[in-house]
Amino acid sequence: MIDRVDMRALPVEIRIQSFEEVNLGYRLEDAMLEASRCLHCKHQPCVSACPVGIDIPGFIKKVSENRLDEAYQVIFGASSLPAVCGRVCPQETQCEAVCVKGIKDKPVAIGHLERFVADHYYANEHNKTELFISNKKKVAIVGSGPAGLSCAHDLLDKGYHVDLYEALHEAGGVLTYGIPAFRLPKSIVKREVQSLLDRGCHIHFDVIIGKTLTIDDLHDMGYKAIFVATGAGLPKFMGIPGEMLSGVYSANEFLTRVNLMHAYEKNAMTPIKRGKRVAVIGGGNVALDAARCALRLGASIVYIIYRRSRSELPARLEEVIHAEEEGIIFKFLTQIKEIYGNDDGQVKSIRCVEMTLGENDASGRPRPIENPHKQKVIPIDEVIMAIGTTPNPLLIQSTQDLKATKHGCLIVNEQTMETSVPMIFAGGDVVTGSATVILAMEAGKKAAFTIDQRLSSNQ
Ligand SMILES: Cc1cc2nc3c(=O)[nH]c(=O)nc-3n(C[C@H](O)[C@H](O)[C@H](O)COP(=O)(O)OP(=O)(O)OC[C@H]3O[C@@H](n4cnc5c(N)ncnc54)[C@H](O)[C@@H]3O)c2cc1C
Image (cartoon, rainbow, N blue to C red; front, top):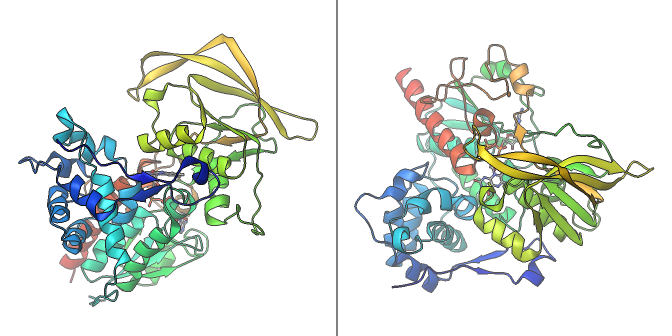
């Protein structure tokens, strides 16, 4: 029996000093050995568990035979962002969760293999300019995160003229401004975006649809279909006393300053406060990313304040393990109630209450219940709120007849991804609320499929 091949990682003492990528990837011998663990079972549950349906056993077989370019083509046929997904997908709850090998042993490291194949492909010279044939039908995509990029990928395959409109000055959405470089180097995102540009996609930066241009303007510009993939970038706050004090950030703002504006670099134009004692509120990937950034910015103590227990943490398991190794302190079963400030209006401490877990709630997780008799005050000088986000209402408010839920998520037909307005489609976090990269990509693919069906039947 061959043990699952672990991925090498930067030593903790080095990684906490920099934004260098923590995981170091497989070597060829690691990848071939790990690929040889796949049982190639008949029912292939991993394929059904992958939202974009990658032929996982197919690409793994090619890795085991050292036919790496062919392995890449198998993945790329279904996924436009293999190097990204190999790094950030929650494989342990998707493909690897149902891996038959995992019943008696550890599952095959599908994500590590996907990452290896994509990195190997990009590291070797390939003819980047592919033949681009346009059918001259124009489609506009609003937002260049995973949903928009994946929709663009599939429409380009079918010969559409694809224009992406992006509010920021860089493409990638959360991949660029949210997930830190030590988890997802920005060169990887750029490389995957570049492969779309090489195939004829156009990206218009610094254009806010709903402000710079409206959806009606896009119609007037001749776009036959529009895919809205604007994500869920509006941070939630808790409404507790002290949230307006100086030293309280939303994770969104904190991470954007660090990742997009490189606030950690000397002489960066966009500044950031470097707290010494930092509390991050929440337990998802966003909270862990913020906590690990704060550590790298020089904090001497960083807490994750989470109201449930370790087993309910929504973050990817690998990130939890890395955060623990790096010295992030998890305060489980703890709820923040109030933030105290000093006379200058700066955060000085937080008051928390202890929780216990009750029956499962509507989310299927145990309901946290406060124990008002167990309270504590913790000295803190920076608080980062990472308790979720909702879609920014700008585009919805500026477009007539677009229907949204009370949480501001666009309502679509789940089969076609069409909104309440004909030929306007939507997908990704703007529909689901904050979710995952691969679900956003799946939505982009579904929309591309319908757009093609509609436009090719309207010759
Ligand atoms: C810090 C962080 C860490 C995460 N970690 C993981 C992880 O490890 N694994 C995972 O699977 N998921 C993770 N997620 C979730 C994942 O990144 C999102 O679910 C995914 O990016 C959603 O993709 P999207 O394309 O719908 O939206 P986004 O990625 O948000 O992209 C939307 C894009 O639209 C642009 N935009 C918005 N409004 C307009 C407008 N009016 N006009 C033009 N452009 C506009 C935005 O600037 C942005 O570029 C993380 C999220 C965050 C915030």
